Length: 265
Ligand code: SAH
Image (cartoon, rainbow, N blue to C red; front, side):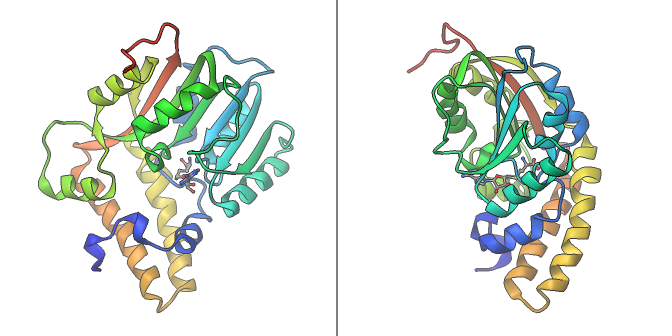
């Protein structure tokens, strides 16, 4: 298989883990953006239960732990990421407030209507935007919130090069208005939608990724799969730079309401 035809799913998990484990974040975002999204959530108390799904090494989980009341569970499928999050929590003396657990977002270990807030930055694509919204709803209390960031098309039409890259990597990627409609149809009232500023990609994601890349390539010198993985990351960055007016990351904040807002089929 040539590198151009690979998606991130085709690389070995160990390589992906090794590459990203040295980074604060594993996707575009920033502490400022996490706080901006948190500013739309008005139902939290010291008793609140918050879940951060696909939390990675816990960049945004720790921002939530420092600024939101309540208890936070960070969940990720990579045990190594969860170890890093739990270490960060201990170092910040927040281990009673935030706890990382290994698990999968398609089989959540929560009770129905247990959660006040579901958070997920740059991770819902793993289960699919629509499926995640629909399946996670039952874990929220009535009036509970969901806040997710997801890649989004900013125009109905776009150059073939960038369209093909994303259709291959994530066929469900959709336009912003369609995504808001999906939220509505999944049983939530959309509360806020905002586009992540460019520095969430550059300063907070690509720049630290260059450092991670150096360490990674030194460790795996001569390993073809590792070199291909690294090249894939570089290609993704180049495409962003070239086509950023056509797509980006969007934060969606929505509230589980009764009656069900959109028509449930
Ligand atoms: N929220 C973090 C990480 C985003 S990267 C950030 O914004 O920095 C996506 C994360 O989803 C990775 O940490 C990956 O390990 C995790 N992931 C992938 N599939 C998953 C699944 N089925 N269940 C839970 N986490 C998953």
